[in-house]
Image (cartoon, rainbow, N blue to C red; front, side, top):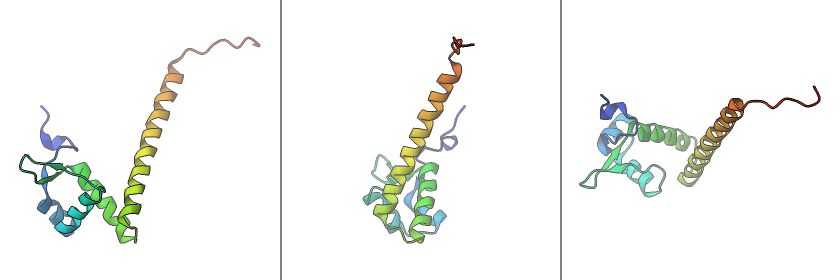
Length: 109
């Protein structure tokens, strides 16, 4: 049986919990959401709910902003990182397909 906390994308943590965990201000987390850098899920009452995946992303964002990057730059970096992951997945899938195909006999052998 799988429980919600087993799923890294399950929205389990409140804004206050995440702020306490990461030692950041709640206003900072709200600003990340307003700038579409990290967009947590919402509870039925409209409160932000963060997953473990979201929390990892916030940690990554905090590290980048601590290095002096703007939120616009951070958002673009996150987009590019996602594109690279997607392209790597496509490349791996293509390699698996090629490896699974029987090789044609070379007519010059």
